[in-house]
Structure formats: structure tokens, C-alpha cells
Image (cartoon, rainbow, N blue to C red; front, side):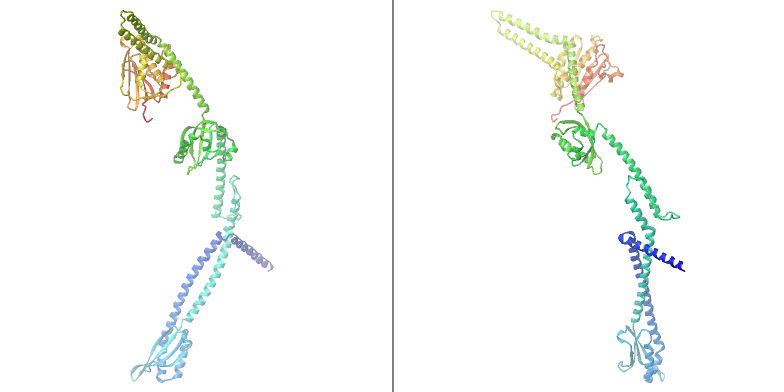
Length: 621
């Protein structure tokens, strides 16, 4: 007996402790799942209870009202004859007894008898609480006398529903109190079991997850309960959390390794890399970029490294367009610009920019230092200028005989005119008109010699490249004038077809003269093995339909090896026994520097054609 009592006390104590835990849990989280569940249960149960109670009360009301009406119907059927007999005999004692009997019926509050023909005067009236009557019924009293059925009076019965209402109120109170107690107990037990089965495990899961960091080892949640026979929803949540923790840890580890690899790649890269904000601030940069601009990590951390401050004034408009382009398209094609270093010096760079977020408020820039490239380009340009000048000198050496002939002709003519003038002066009398003509000839021959020397000086002088607005036909005519004797000496027939009204071009006159001169001399050498009748050279100029001026030099020489045409313009490649392979390579470089193209093809039926184009100059350019 004592053991049973102790067991009951232990069970009661455990139930009280669990209840306290539930209440504490509910108090700690008024907006938790348990509280919301309790509210939902109470609300739904109360609503259902009210609806069912209302239906029950309505059914009881209808039944009670039907009972009252049935009772009144029974009065009309069972009591009227005896009441009519008493009224006919005027037996007041019998009438009162019968009325008292009617008044004792449930829900009857008053009865009276009125005599017919006495202006509705009540003969006898019995009432408990006439003011409480709800509705009344009147029944005529019939009596048969001497074979006639006559109405001798009226029975009025008054009934009330106060008793019905009281019964309904008692029923409602009983139902509501009983249901309230039931709902409270059921809700309490539901809350207790919900806490035991769900809420306490959710708190434990939240505590474990809240203290867990992704970089830690994968989380292994487990529920503090006996393992269920079949996996339930909580166990599925725990399994999903454990899988998610493992996946997140794996992804974090892979991401960290990838970030470390990218960081090592960025830091060891010779290309400057920086991350920028749309406001111009540089957020992060590698060492290569910081060394380019002369800043250090402290400057970067303090925000002193700004894209705008690094850009010289003349480049800021271009820099603003770059930001707008990156904002609009997400990428900017690489372009050259300059950066201001921390010490105020400038550094030429090649920069490419791309945005890497959806809003395009941040991006990454890739910067290549062009200092050494610029220096190498300048050195290469100087070497090319020197080589070009040397080539021109060598070419002039080949034209020595032609140049000597071109210069000796005006000199010889000058001497002849001078001697003729002296003779005309020694005549008696002196012939002044002839002397004047001789002096004019001397002047013309001197100007002719000066023109020849000017062309030679222009070709052999060494100077920087100039871009002037020139006529390509003038360039061709000047070169033909220098090579006339060379052509005559090799018995080459020259024909020209220079289109009139060609647009001017923008370029260096001397360099273009060198290209034409090289093509003419190559054509002359290609025709040395021909007989004199087959040595023909054509030089033409025209527009090519794409707003470019086209110059063509055709010969009837030995022609071209089609398999080696592309190699003709390679440096140091030559088909001549004494050539060094520089002329055509330099010529192509010069034409490409002018924005044009130089190429070779075969001339039918014999020989080769060398053609080049240069863009026509626009007055708006």
C-alpha cells in the first residue's frame, strides 16, 4: 500500500515538474509555437463550443416552446366541457378548482373565464404573475341545452416562456462550464505533450545551431529521446540539418581553398589587379598594382588610394566614360592611359575593367605597366628610323649615276649659256637681247639643279616622322624625276596613268617617296634579264572605292613564286643575289603606319604587281 502511495506521489511530482517546465517554456516564448498552438486550440474550441451550444439551445428552445403549445392544445381538448358545465351551473367552487389545476401546469401563468353577452366581463380569474405572461389563448365554452349548442363563455389561458429561458440559461451555463474545463484540460495536456514531443527538441536544436560556426567541423545533431520505430518529422529535420551542415562545411572549405588559390594567384601576378567602388574608392589591390602607383597597404586601408586621384586631369573625362560604360555593359575593353604615382610621376598603363555584381556598383580592374613596352617601342622606332635612313642612303647609292646625270645636265647647260652670253657681250655692238636670253637660261638651269638637289636632300635627311597633307601624285612625280636616268640607262619604258582630282592624303612625304622608289628600283632589277623590247613599267593611281587611294607598280619581269609571295615582306628575306631583304619589309611597315596595306600579285601574262593603299584625308578629320 505504501509503495503504491509513493509511486503515485512520484508520478504527481513528475507531472508537476513537467507542467512547470511547460509553463516556463510558454512564459519564455509568448510568441512561440506552443503559445500559438494553445491560442489556436482555445480559439477554435471556443468557436466550436459556442456554435454547438447555440445549436443545442435552439433545439431545446424549439422543443420547450412545442411542449408549451402542446400543453395549451391539451387544455383546449380536455378541460372545456367540464368548465362549460360548471359555468352553466354557475358552480364557482368547481370552476376555481379546475382553474387552479390549470394554473399548476408548467409555464401557465394565468387563466380566466368570461361570460358571453356581459361585455366580456370576467367571471373568475386566477393568476400567478399576470405581468409575466408571454402569449395567451382563448377557447370558446360550448353547452348544449334543449337540443341547441350555444357559446356560453370564453376560457382565456396565459402562458409564459420565462421557465423556458431559465432552463436554457442553466443548460448554457452547464455546457459552457463543462466545455471550458474540458478545453482547458485538453489544451494543457496538448501543450504538455507538444512540449515533450516537439518544443523541447526545437529549443535544443536551436541552441546547438546557434553556437555552431560553418568553419567548424560538421554539426551532428541528435534528439535526446528514445529512437522511434519509424522516422518522424523531427528526425527528418535533424537528418536534413546534419546533411546541410556537412554540405556547408564542404562548400566553405572548398571556397576557402579557392579563395586562397585566387589570393596567391593575385598576389604573385605581375599584372596589377584592384577592386573598385562606383564612387572611385579602391577597396583592395595586389602588390603589383600598389608598386605601380607607389602606395602601400596603409594608404589602401585608410582610403587614400582613389581611382580619380590616380588619374591625370586630361584623362578624367575618358575615365568617366569608362565608369559609365562599365555601369551600362558590365565590361570595358582594354585601353591605354596614364596613372599618377604617389611621388607625382606618371606611369603609362594598359587597363581593362569589368563589373562583377548585379548592381554594377563594384568591379575589378586589370592593369599592365607599359613603361618597358613604351621604352622598347621608342627604341625600336629609333632603330627603324635609322634603318630606314640607311636604306635610303643605300638606295641613293644605287642611283648615283642617275643623280649625277640629272645634276650634270643643268650644270652643262649653265656653262653653255654662260659662254654664249660672253660671246654676245664681246660682239660689236653687244647683242643685249641674246645676253638676256642666255642669263634666263642660266637661271632656269640653276633652279632645275636646285630642285634635283632638294629632292635628294629630302630623301637622305634624317629626321622625325611628319604627317602632312600631301598629294600622292606629287610624290610619284618626284620619284620619277629622280629615277628618269636610271630608267633610261636600263632601257625601261615607263608609262603613267595618274588619276586627276585624287583626294589628298595625310602622311610623311619622304617615307612615301621611299616606298615608291623601292618599288620602282625592284621592278627595274626584275627586268634586267629581259630584252629591251620587253622592259615595260606602268605606274598608276586611282581611288579603290573604299575612300582609299590606290597606287600600283607593274613590271614585265621574271614574276613571282606564288608559294613564297607572303614571305616577300619578311625581314631579311630576299630573292636577289646581292639583296639583304629590308626594302619591302620597311615599305610594308611604312604603309601600315599610314593606315594602309601593301601587297603583291602576279601580272598577266608576265611580271609582278605591287600595290598599296592609303586612306584619303577628310577635311573634317
